Amino acid sequence: MELCLPLNTAMVLEPILCPACHSSNVVKHGKSSEGKQRYKCRNPQCSRSTFIQHYSYRGYLPEVKQQIADMAVNGSGIRDTARVLGISPTTVIEELKKVSSPEVSEPTVAGTVVRT
Image (cartoon, rainbow, N blue to C red; front, side, top):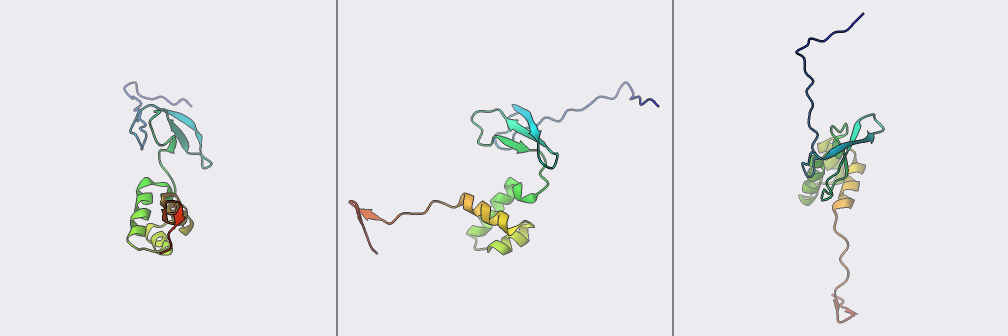
């Protein structure tokens, strides 16, 4: 059995853009463990080196990561944030570890520790 396509049928190629820098200088970079195509941004100024076009887990989406930070600032707990966003509490904890600022050291005056 032969499969024939009409002559006027054309393939449409979807351009792949980096989600961080919106550059089209992107190449294929293997597959994920779930079999999804991974891409690599070749822009040297880009902050993100590899990405997947369509993530299957919501916790990887940049919008969700921003929502985690916003909810933490507004006083939402870890379990509450996870339930509302439909992700794992472990994902919330790991993301908050990434965005938290380093600990502030004790104030010093001319090399001596000031006790307040």
